[in-house]
Image: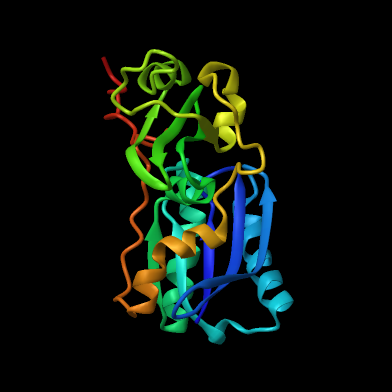
Length: 230
């Protein structure tokens, strides 16, 4: 079963093809561009390039897995809207996966903090034990995250971590005070598919792709109009 994975929850836009078999999965190709303002421009060409590199067509896809965030409003909705429209056009199932979970799974064994840049000097974060989420996702200031993970105090709610992953962890590594997996900054497509693999193998029904924003968008409805005459 050939699966397309999409993620635009971070400054990177990612399109990957992964082959899912009865007892495993195999990465076929992955295209990625890191540009926080170019998700809308880059994702479709990346999908086309991935399909071309693999020598397949959209009709060869079995399912689509999309990272649902957390992430900034504008970038995140590009990936989700693309996944939904392609799924409907091709008549195939779509499945959602927390983007932080993909990084947590890819980080492997141990206690790991995953943090991505939420802007406004904040991060989206979650903690993982052997790839399984233990806390989060939440949005907070890096200093508050450092206090929560108990960097050195041994008594946090989230539990101590021994390393971190994600571009937010790299940006605020001096605050978190743990080693950063600098090769693991953006959600890998294969990890997204690995998390959704049981649903894919069971041919589970398509899921609504509900974004994890964690906070309100910057744009708000205007307040009531002020009277012209006083």
